[in-house]
Length: 197
Length: 197
Image (tube, rainbow over all chains, first blue to last red; front, side):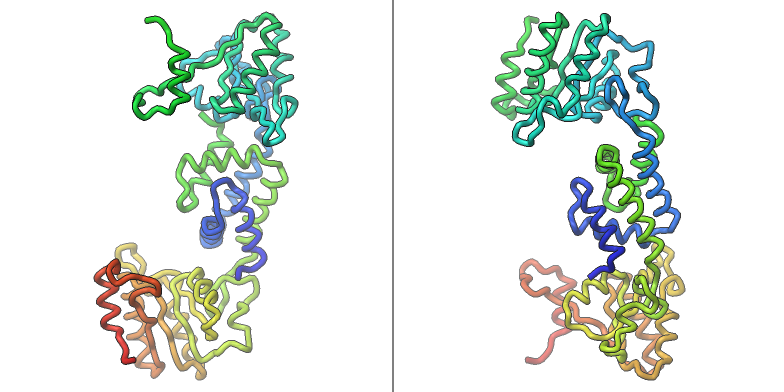
């Protein structure tokens, strides 16, 4: 129905997450009907972003300069490392403006179902950072999913013998949440994580 | 929160129709985390499509060769022109495999609200095609909206004095539709368009 060039463009859009065939067709036609400058700018932005952005050699967050802004910031507390699954988790954490330590991005979680083992994610890179005397605490902030919990457990077993404190962020009822509508697992976690007041 | 390069990419994605900020962020990160080849291919597909695709000088449909495949196809009935608003309308019509005539893409509809006048769309180009002796019928298939109806009326008033038959596609209850759930305007159109059986 569409010419080869258009089909190619539609296929490229279809590869994006959450973009089905109909949306891909709509996006492709939008690009075709928009001014030439827009198509060129968009194409340039994609290539530039992909070429300029690399991973920080210390924390594996994405960055344009190595080491990244957080790792090279003297004001950050470099005795704490918060371990997260993805780059977007760093951004979520940074938005709180509360955490002042460093990060370590694993780029995934251990998942035997998807053939992702401990060696596929940045765990050994985390361990090698511990040789630094200054690090006193590792906060594991992987997601509260089966994979995230397995990864947290695996990392804590590796690190504890090295004499570094390992903590896990709290899981419980979200602020503004309602006990009545909270699922059982979260309630169990909330009870387990109770503290004296 | 994001570096300049990433922000630029997010902004480009945000310009696409139906893509809000959160989706744009998701798409940008997908591109950043995907293999370099994908980013390059996508970027190439955008530029190529935008550069190769032009408008047919006869019907203003998009095409890689001028005149387009439909206009240059000897098997098509070149005594009938179906007038549509957009390129996608041509595709919708072609999917029926029933219509064998030619097309004329207006690239919009008359809309005083949006400052789109008759001279902004391809109406004079349609009129100039009528000098061809062979054309016997103009089927106006603009959308059944205020703008589409106004455009249909405008074109029919221009063409009728030239002695060419002008028709409008039927509007009524869609096949599989339910009278009970049909809006009033469609019902009125369906009654108006009734035919003896």
